[in-house]
Amino acid sequence: MNNRYGLYRTRIGRYFPRYYEGILETDELIKVENDIWNNLYLLLNKAKNNQFIAYADEDGIYAYEQLFQIVADPETETLEERRFRLLNRIQTLSYYTMIYLRQKLDSLFGKNNYEIEMDYLNYTLYIKSNASNSFIYKESIATINKIKPANIVFINVPFIPTTIEVGEEIYQQKWWWNYILGGKWKVGQKPIISVQELAKLKSEEVQSLTPLMLNKLKTFTGEEIQAVLINDTYKITNFVQKIITGGYLRIQYNIENWEEIKLITNIKFLDGEDLILSNDPVYIPIASDTMIEHRINIREVGTNG
Image (cartoon, rainbow, N blue to C red; front, side, top):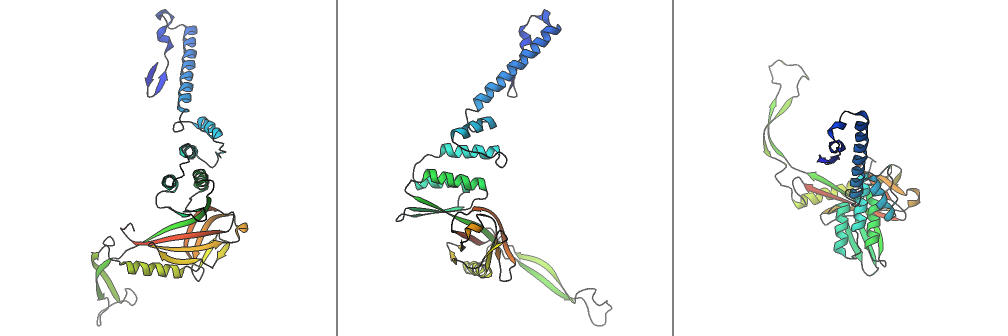
């Protein structure tokens, strides 16, 4: 057997005496036995790989899903998503610590894409998170319910992060008249005054905006947002609050008629004339009265704040 390129190629014929070479019956027998040994190697290699979730094929992934009582949907979930879910489940040990919970949420949502608030007096765990699709949402719910103690109530608060970058540029310009008295010219051929840029004095990468300026932009943004449009049909005009805190503009509102919605797939901000200010594709299942929070970060270009 030759282990070349990671595949075994059986050569049974080299073990036969030379006087069998060229005989049809022997050649066909060798060909069949070569195929049998090659298929056996492939099956052995498949069985070895399926011992590990990280290397398992679809048959191996399905076998592990049966062990964890997971019902996958191959039409909407890729093999890598199913593999990720199994690795997440098998690594989810019930340590019941906030540090471990944050580590798992980091792997699901990414750092700084969620918030944890624990109400110790009422034994309630609030997690503000942004699930980009149904797979992440369902897996996050399963993970949190497995980690948290049984006496803790878990409430998911969907939130949508948005970042707006602003910058200031300064240019030196020159003005001149295109028409002079006594000259010959056609009316309307050129503007009366033209502007020519001579030099760029400051680029937007050089920071110049003060925190006061950025907070005024956040205040202006909050005042311009007058309504929320859910799934292009359900309009909300009453907000829980619009507040600037922690460097963010936070906009909160309640979904009260959840029986009419059940699943939110799109959220738009509207101004006072119902013009669209933002358009967010989301995945938020609704099973009860729910509060949604938008977190808008207006920062200067080149900063991480």
